[in-house]
Image (tube, rainbow, N blue to C red; front, top):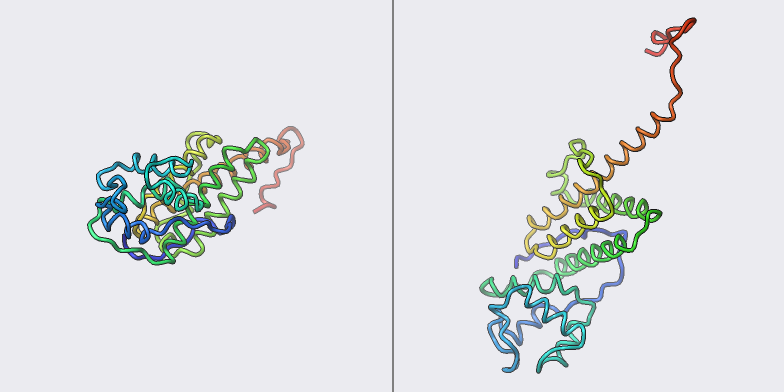
Length: 240
């Protein structure tokens, strides 16, 4: 992993962070490439798929596991997001050597992951009345990202954004947010994180354009008809 600094995906939903087990604590037992049996008894993680690693982490989170269960349950139940942690561990197993990212990067990535996870849960639980509030929240988060990230300003053009071709339903918005979270889970370099943010801003941009179209259509529907019949006065020259 490269040592980089990132900006969190959202600062409006910041909650106290429950930290995952740091990777340097993992490699102290499992080896720098996860090639060892931890304490001589665990399964060798190197060679496992990301899906298998996540299943093992989920097992520990639910109080299940093998001979290392007592130790690992304590590690995994520190508020860990098993999707993100499995991606981190799998990346280490296929990347020779070990380079722990900066503390700032670790914090910001975890904050992004946690923010997006909370957002996903909120969308799942939302009803017709609460979805507009969540939509505003997503747009505010995107604006915050754009304001504080100069790289995004180079890659994003709000003027070029268009309304979504298909209706942005609750399920469509949830899938978009889930895609962004998966993107963050698997990002270990600055250019990778930026791609995730661009996708998030594209979602917010589509939602903004959709709202603009609805407002215009509503305004047009309520606009009184212009009388052009007998006795009508042409006011055009006075309106120029």
